[in-house]
Amino acid sequence: MANKIKTLPEKVINQIAAGEVVERPSSVVKELLENALDAMATFIEVEIQEGGSRLIKVTDNGEGMGPEDAKLAVQKHATSKIHSVDDLSHLHSFGFRGEALASIASVSHFELSTRLADSLSGVSIKIKGGGTPKIEEAGRPTGTTVSVANLFFNTPARLKFMKKKGTEENHIVTVVTTSALAFPEVGFRLVMDGKETLHVTASSFTQRLSQVLGKDISHSLQPVDFEAGRIRIRGAVSAPTITKPTRENLLFFVNHRWIMNPSLGHAVMTAYHTLLPTRRFPVAILFLEVPEEEVDVNVHPTKREVKFAKDREVYEAIVRSIRSALLSSTEPLQPASTIGNLMDHGTPGVSYNPSPETMGLLQEPGTTFTASTHPGPDLYEKIAQKYPSGVSGIASEAAVSSFLEKGFGKSSLQSTRIDPHVSLYNFSQIFNTFILFQSDNEMYIADQHTVHERLNYERFMKAVREKKLEVQPLLVPVTVELSAKEAQVLKNNIETLLELGLEAAPFGGNTFLIRSVPADLAGRNIVALVKDLVDDLAAQDASGVKSTNRLDQARERAATFMSCRSAVMAGDRLNEEQMRRLIDQMREANLPFTCPHGRPTIMSIPLSELYRRFDRH
Image (cartoon, rainbow, N blue to C red):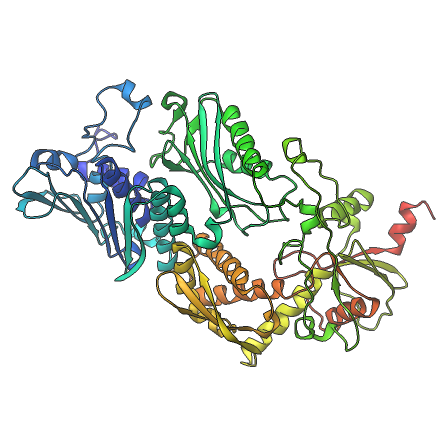
C-alpha cells in the first residue's frame, strides 16, 4: 500500500507559512517595517499601490546586508537574532531579518535590494512565487528596499478574501502610524497611489503625537508616567471630555511592540468608569515596559497578541497610571451622569438649543426648548476611589431598562406600532429622557432621542432620494485637521458625503475645508461633527465588508450618524405639545419602532399586565 502521509514540497510549506504570517497587505507592511527598525533605520519610506495588492515597497536607510546575509535572509528560519531556545524569552528585537521573507516571497513577485555601508555595491535578489532566487549585483545607497508586487497572485483563494481597497489602505495606515508613534526618533513617509499620506521627521514623542493624531487631540492629552514594581507605563490619555465613538484610539505597546489585548482595553475603561458618556471611548496611547521574561510574544504567528506572566499586576498598573494622569490634569473632570448618557452628542456642560430647522415639525412657533445641564462635581477625590456610580439628575437608558425588565420582565414589554386612530393622552416626561403616555388599554414608554432619530433618518433619506436635501453653505469654510488614518477615510468617502450635503475639500496634507453641511446640522460644532463622522465610517471600513453596494452602505451609515446628531437628546426638556408631536409623527408615518441603530423607540405595557402585576383581578 502507498503511504498516506507524505512530506509536503518546499513551495507548499512556504505558502502555508505565508497563510499564518501574511493575512493581508498590512501584514506585509508590518513585517517589513519591523525588519527596517531592527536594522537601525532612521528613515523609512512605504509606497503602496492599489491597497497593497499591486505593490508594497519599503525602503530604509538602515545598516543593510552583505550578499551572503541577503541570500540567507530569504531562506526559512535563517536569523542573526536567535542562537538558542533561551533567546526566545529574551527577544530584544521585533523578530529577525528574514523571519517572514520566505513566506512573503512565496505568494508574490518579490525583490530584496540591500547594501552595507562599507561595500562598493549592493545585491538584488528576485523571487517569483517561491521559485529559484535570481541574484544580481546592484548599485544603491546604504540600506534595504523590499518590493512585494502582485500579492497572492498564485493563491487565488487568499486573494478572494482581500477586502475593498479602502479597507486595506486603512489597515496599512494604522500599521505605519502606530510604528511612527512607537519610534518618534525615526522618520516615516507613506505614499499611496502616488499621493503622500504621511510624512513625519524625527521628533520628540509630544511632537510625534501632534504629527500623527493632529494638534486638536494631541494638545488635549494628559501625559502618563507611572511605575509599579518592575512595570513602567508611559504615554498619554485624553481627558474625559475628549471621546471617540470606537475603541480604535486605544493603542498599546509592550516593549515598543504594538499589540492587541482585550484585557488592557478593559483596564482603560475601568480607569474611566463613570467619567465617560454611554458608548464613548477615550484616546489612550500607552507604552508598557515589562521584563522580557514576563511577556510571551510568541502566542500569535505575527506577534500581534502577547501574554503576560503577571496579567493582574499589569491590569492594575494600567488603571492606576490613568487615574494618576487624570488627577494631575488641569482640566475639570465631569462624571458621565452630568455629561448625560446620550450617545454624548454635544460638548459636555454646554447648553444646546436646536434651531427650528433641526427640530423639524416638532418645534412650533412660540414654544421653548432648553437643554438640561448640571455642573459636574469635582472628581479629584473620587477618582482615586472606586467611582460611586450614583446618577444625579439624569437617568441612563440602561438604568430605566433594567428597572422595567426587573419589574415586568422582557416578555411583558412589547415594541409595536400604535394605531394612528387610537386616542393618546396623559403625556409626561421622566428624567428628561423618556416620554410616558397612555391609551385606554396600554401604557407606553418612548425614548425621545431614538424616536426623533428615526423620524430624522426617514426624512433625511427621502430628501436624498428625491434630491431635495436642504444644505447650509458655510459663510466661512471650517478647517478640519485630521490624523493620517482619518484623512484616508474621508478621502475614500468624499463623494458619498457630498450627496448627503457635507462638502469637504482637501486643503493640503491631512487638512480639509468644510464648505457646507446638511441644514439640520447647522450651528453644530463642525470640527467635532466631522471627526466623529469619520470615526463612524472608519468603524464600518474596519468591518471589512467587501460588496458591490459599498457606497450604499457608506451612505446609509453617514445618514444614520447625521440623523442621530440632529435629534433631541436624553436630558433635553420637552413640553407636552412637543412630546405629542413626536409620537404623532411616529405613528402616522407607520415607521419601524426601532431607531436606525436598532434600539427600540417605543415600548408598551398592556393594562392587563399592570393589573396582574399589582394583583388586581
